[in-house]
Amino acid sequence: MSSPSKRREMDLMKLMMSDYKVEMINDGMQEFYVDFNGPKESPYQGGVWRIRVELPDAYPYKSPSVGFVNKIYHPNVDEM
Image 1: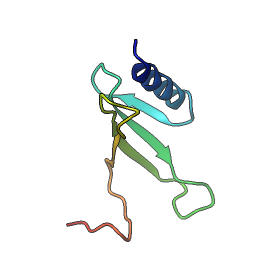
Image 2 (image 1 turned 135 degrees about the vertical axis):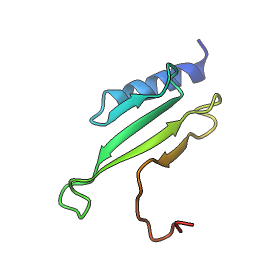
Image 3 (image 1 turned 90 degrees about the vertical axis):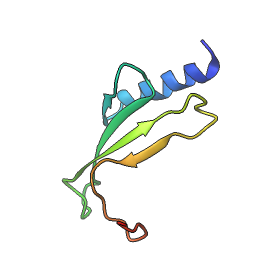
Image 4 (image 1 turned 180 degrees about the horizontal axis):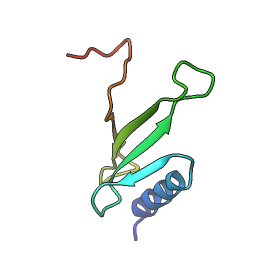
């Protein structure tokens, strides 16, 4: 097993052992969803957001692709 593969496995294992809900897409370790809650004592408390993460073959040398699955408001992002 090459070093990037070990790094991918280690990072994914840390994420799965955290407080976040991780749901794998397909059987591989390269695509998955992560659900996270809004911070306590903030306007986002009680909210749950889901992101889709795709790890490229060259991870960690190439950054992952991350995108929100559900709608999220951000003042610097145009809906168009």
